Length: 360
Image 1 (cartoon, rainbow, N blue to C red):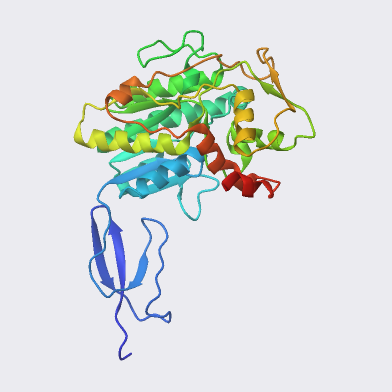
Image 2 (cartoon, rainbow, N blue to C red):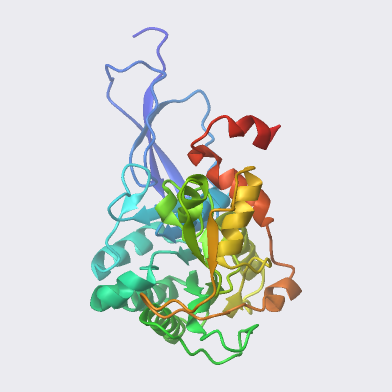
């Protein structure tokens, strides 16, 4: 057709692009379709250059609270980011069962990432207690296999671990302190650390505490799940005032992962175990009161419970992490809790009348 440009396909292969002329299509010439990194992209080109970031990162658990933040952080920092998930992966991310070693092998060897951030895990202590075998397969077995695959291609693996590897009796904890987990979740994360470092001497372990951020539903975080109890002030609510926590925004952890990865690309000695955490110490009761205050909501219905919890998996009283190792490297970012929690929870504010007083 006169005046119509040739349609071309761009075939992405790690490190290069190949342009191939296509047969005529019935779709308009300005039609473009783009889905995942390995799929065909149809375009009508007016120029031949396509800007593809040269640094490649793979994020597991990219559909989860932390994984979404890590994916966004790398993508917005000029990295070619690919995320993978399982049940909620499509259409944005690659669908991969991390227990399928062959599928993991093909994904990693096809994409050839420089960095892998392993966020996927069973992170709910009570679920781990009730489903120990499944939790161990994901938290330990899959992590060790990922480490092995990363080592095979020379990729830098960051394994996300937990402050629950400590018993909480002698804080703050440095990376050199001996772990002693109280519950099965902490044990699986510690075993995962060992599996990663045994299979990949150049890997990094990043221990972090309780997380919050831009949740898709309140139940996605042990911090945000309290919001309904805060909002329904006509009913008293018991809140734990025993366990000391350090709520940490996922975007801060994501930034630390990116900074760690970029520093590693310049310095191969960056490896081993690291800690990152928010620096505001709060019980769940104090978090709930801070949430109420951030939204100008009453908190008199919230009741502090100072006894050690007797239901569910045992928790450490205070597993505060010493973060000076990363801070010495010039790595870190912290969002004040009041600011971060307001950003995270305002979409779930029930009484819309409060929004004017909160944001004006």
